[in-house]
Amino acid sequence: MAVTEEEVDFFIQTISQHSSYDFGDYSIKSFTRRVDKLLMDNRMDIHQFVAKLSADSKFLEKVVKDITVNTTELFRDPAIWQAILRDVIPRYKDQQKIDIWHAGCSTGQEIFSMMIAMHTKSLFEKSNFYATDLNTDVIEVAKSGKYKYREIDEYINNFNTAFKETDLPEMKDYIEISRGKSLIKIKPFLTQKATYQQHDLVTLQPPFGKQFDIIFCRNVLIYFNHDLQNRIFEMFYDTLVPGGTMIIGRHEGILGDIVNKFEKRGTIYIKK
Ligand SMILES: C[S@@+](CC[C@H](N)C(=O)[O-])C[C@H]1O[C@@H](n2cnc3c(N)ncnc32)[C@H](O)[C@@H]1O
Image (cartoon, rainbow, N blue to C red):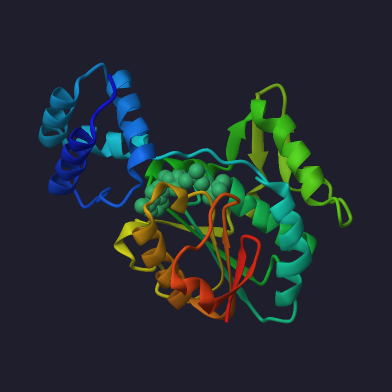
């Protein structure tokens, strides 16, 4: 039986009483589905579950990781990468350095997509890539740059579509594909380039103490309610340099007045 809204509230309150995590402004619908799944996976009812959360901090940390949705791909939504290659990256060609933040980076495929895109435009060396996520397990995967071989067909398709409008780079210059080991491995010159930090967007405190030229936050805000989304958009606005670029997910948009402070080009927003 599905958990009720009151039970989900009880769960959220227990987490916030016993940790720094606050899921109070996550979108209730998708969050309820995640709680239902956790109860099934752990074969517990909500009362047993909440009791264990209160008593066992390791269990709580694991639950926080399990509650996040970490789905991602290399060059996910390739039409957006076509726009990034065509309209965003060329704007930075004369800049001395380019600071890029991937908020909610998950296992890193989005960071490596941007690194490859910047490399093809000869802007890789002067770019700095910063990446954050709430979930430290996915950050460790991102650092390793190792992915399951079964994703390869999707990655090749995305790669070919993303670069459709430009000269197609050689994927093997960036990625080692080891059929025998069932592994895809991002080359070290890419994996060594990013700086990672655990960071919770809910705190509204920007990480790394700096401003960014480009902020990616794709397929993360969709899990938050509109109030929290708007507060995070304000934080991104303040954290971008004038004329900076914010890129959000294909199914995401700005509903608050903050939209007027950006020039909107699809899911790419330029700070006015
Ligand atoms: C679906 S993935 C998106 C990955 C990538 N940006 C993409 O579009 O392919 C969402 C990520 O947001 C992270 N996340 C969820 N809540 C967060 C929060 N409060 N602060 C930071 N990251 C969060 C999750 O851990 C997860 O890795």
